[in-house]
Image (cartoon, rainbow, N blue to C red; front, top):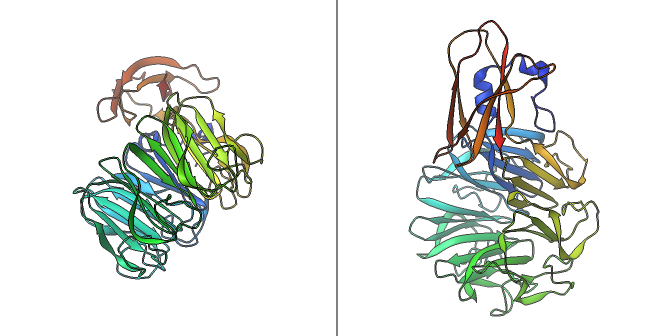
Length: 445
């Protein structure tokens, strides 16, 4: 049990074992935001979830929502996705297998049924490299660069030349696909030549100017220099190889960030350089700059921009000045990750999707959900060596400190080590058998 700020109360510490310390101390390394739920991965490969679970989208075997992070899978997870409008979730394991859980009324899980499930179900056994979850459809890429899709297809978002849904993965493009994104009834494809393609609904010009109306086959949007893309409800962001930010589609809340509320069916440059990551939610957008600063624009009715107001904006606004390394945008909430492994959230919390231990307490300022990996554990009153095995972020520095008491704590540095090429870190130290020894591992900037 933890407090909402991620720190373990002292009275609980006295009863916990070293094994609990080791599993709990791993930093967060990846995040994903769904419609009213969220996920994160820790560096030990464990998958955690919080928020709405009415369709089993958290994968914990229940349909009960949770307002605090809950472990779903203990190890081997390498990627997780859940779209801003989706009630289903996909994740990938280190063996290349694809797993799914949640709503399946359109066959979006790809298991050959239309049956919803609240437990992770293996869909593909190997060779999966990338994932995307739309409103009611799913996409994935295999190691040979092929693109596969399943689920709802009324607007042609699967790109198979039909408007027929499928509950089994269907081959769409045979090779050269390197990334995918899925929005509401729309899909985007990035090929390894830097070209951007799209298929599906196009009501607000979100597939660009080369197509009028919906399309059930991939159409070219940009021919080169695209590095990444993100698909929101009815708008897209595009990141080019020169660090420039572009947008197109619906702009009713200013989510394109161009200073207007006008839709556009042609990619429009928003910033000229220094953008390194993008995320799109329902009518709002987030992006990161190369200095680690977090910026936002668009709908802010639930405080999802995190600027301290509930006012929407049609210009990019700086939210955090630095140290941000990952972003995720849901329906009305946002998550971000700092380089110390701490997890932060803002916006709608109607179902506990912020993971702060409360429900219905929205916040318009970034709130720390899990602290940096500054964790404390008691060691039994025995002699000999104690070894902490900790998985951190590759190349980062960590310190091991010891104190003989917690009230007041007097932390004495014991060692500072750098995590190795796989993030593993070992500390070995000899405690004094005649005294209580409390230990902590902390990140060293």
